[in-house]
Length: 360
Image 1 (spheres, rainbow, N blue to C red):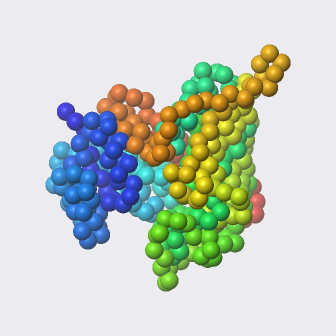
Image 2: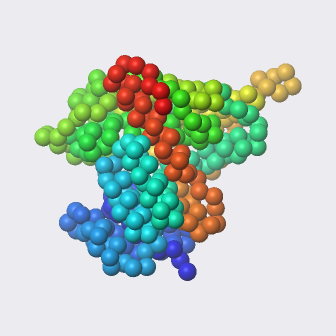
Image 3: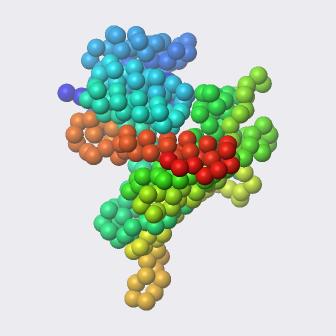
């Protein structure tokens, strides 16, 4: 029998969740969104049987729901995940996992109590380049990754002004939260070591400058708030002795958007990178996956050829959630990893605020 899924949130990410769930053989039976008419419109567009204006109604009326996908502003990730887990549903939640680490701890406790899967859409792990690189790491070619550099930088990439993205109460932060994928991917490659210390600073230089708005057409709100960072730089040490440098920005004086993880291992170095011609537009992207090794006295750079993936692993990530529920595949991410990631993000903001290194 097909796994039955309900989706909370009728925004643009629904197309990728729907595609991945259906690729895995799941049935999307309901969509819920509090905005008037949004759920009905999405249901019609994506061929979903039932539409609701409240999560409560969906959970009450769709008795045979096995799992729920959460695609809403960051503030509501934890409350909705808790509500669905307590209702006995598996949960697939968009990134970030929550606004802070303590919320993730509550989510983990609820998942454990319910005996249900809790996974997050760290879709960049599911990209072909990332999976190819991970196979080299798992095979031992790379050895231990001593150091890594995670970068997601944009020149003109602020996602609107005064909306939920730029309102800390709703988003939890700016690009550190929004573009956390490369931090997560670096940790994934490194074996998700336990963090020890974080030193970081944030910059809000351009956060109210509309010359730095991204190309997504998200409406501005004149009466809204812009109280998050535009850029952040940091350094993380781990209890294993490994280190991570990070740079994330929506608006920073850089040449072009760059999305990358570079690492230096005891057996090989490597890079997974995506370059955009214009901030945020996937169709202009150039993907790279490379290994750096010493062979026969020579410095050799291996170019790893992988299939094109315009959705940056989004549908594969959703498919993996269904396959993990059904025991057909290992989950691409775990709640404990999400907790470690949020501990690092919490410490990054705390370090920026206090001007001091933070012990985790």
